[in-house]
Amino acid sequence: MKRWMAGWVAVLALATAGACGGGDDDGAVATKAGDDATSTTAEGGGAAAKKTSGEEVPAFLADLKRVCTTQVGFLGLTAYEAGAGGGAGRVHPVALFEDYRGAGFIDSSRTLPAGWQVEQDGNYADSSELKAIELVACSDRTTESPTGVVCTFDGDKDEAPAKLELVDATYEVKVYAATTGELVHSATLEAKNSECPFIATFKKGDKTFVNEPSDDDYIGVLKAVVTP
Image (tube, rainbow, N blue to C red; front, side):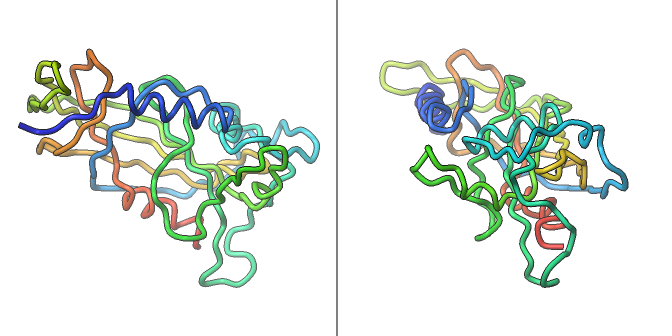
């Protein structure tokens, strides 16, 4: 049998991160590599530029999810200019958020190349390190397609084995300028897999395991604007 990891462990970890970062997460994230990405670069601005507030800098990294939901930027961050300053090798730092189980965007724990993300330090009274962020990327699951493949996972001690049906999914990734909320890039990712993962993280009572894009999938989409 496959192994499983109870979702409540991940819930605790996400809740702890939310307490530090201002998030409102309530679940575990299961990851499985997908493939097939198609992308397009947006030509115009979003309705976003209509509202901004002063030279505002978010207190916490998680506060940047506001850009995903309202397209309202933070003018205290660094303005995005595609390809500006140095050409090849120029990095435009990005904050990546993923919509979790339809419960809202949470800051992603994906591993991206060095320099692509800005880490918040332990001094939460001073968030000046976040000023370097130029982009906010938001990944939203838009469709789900059950595969008919049912995976069985060993339960924890005294827990019965869990059976989860694999579900393929489509994700829409939108990348906004952090200062204005202007849409600068969009892409579609297809996460498909018919093989059961060796380890799954989920909540008790879940009946499905939804496939997700891999870290490499996100890197492939984001590099068009992070390292143009």
